[in-house]
Image (cartoon, rainbow, N blue to C red; front, side, top):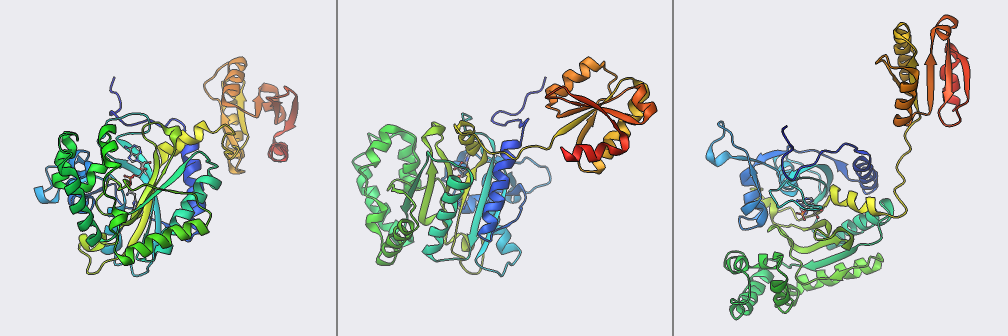
Length: 419
Ligand code: HAM
């Protein structure tokens, strides 16, 4: 027996998954986003350059594809996220329209230690607004997401965390202060943080170690280092969020795990998810375009939500989810092999009229077919025996009440459509 790859899942029922995607499509359309798709395989270099070589995703979690046909410098990988890919697509296709508001959904791959809500193949709904420098856009994006979670999905037990990472000059000043702060703390922090404090100091805030986090709560914060322009934008962002009645908490240690961010960063978290509490994360990335080789910068903002984590939240909802009710199922039951051709024709006629039907053609007894129809949640059984075949009728049995009536085959569709 060959088992599935560790950290992956079989979805044997996609109802909830599709519900989330459908809700997102409807919701984002109201904000004039349109759907795009990019490849699942991308050049490894795309993520090395954009996410940062010292991030966990690039340093430890990439699925690099072994291929005889690729040169070392053109290695390809399974995408771990979509932002870099969307920016690549924007530049490569010479998109002229800005802001370019697009969304996509699909599988991402990260070689993480699997646990509840954390997989090696997982699915994101990702959205980006490329080519917009206005901080009001950040507020609009966050408001759109908040309304999606609260109204579309009906979630209530979540919080929005925000922080402001400033511009590159702000971060240089902040990093210097942070390095000075960490000098006296070297013996108290974990080995990973020691390495990070040398390579990419902001990444110390991603540490999962509670004792390190306790130390970092006292660390100098980036928002204390903002230049005048950034400080104004940080204030404006909060003002817009308050004006839009969005509750949020400022978290100075929130830096997000990817290097391309500057200015606004945010996460939507829920304590109902356990250790993997973030179900949506995003922020602004003003230099990514030039980092990937564009002739100019395209200031941008975006976010991604984990579909599996949203599914976990929706499954816990006490009042359930108003899933679209499925159309009633009609099960056609030939009493013997002689009626199988007619059963196929009747099921085909129902399908031609966009009714949901299935013919049971395994040659089972009526009792067994009734059991099967019950398990399938059929609304009516359409029984065809020798008599019905001769008289060109069907015995229609209501699976809830047990009532049955003989109906001429030519009247069947009309009767079923009447409900
Ligand atoms: P991220 O925070 O790495 O951001 O991922 C976004 C979301 O994907 C997370 O909040 C989580 O719900 C889900 N997720 C991440 N890793 C896993 C995993 N191993 N298993 C299950 N779910 C997971 C990004 O990917 C950025 N590209 C978001 C963005 C878009 N920023 C700007 N634009």
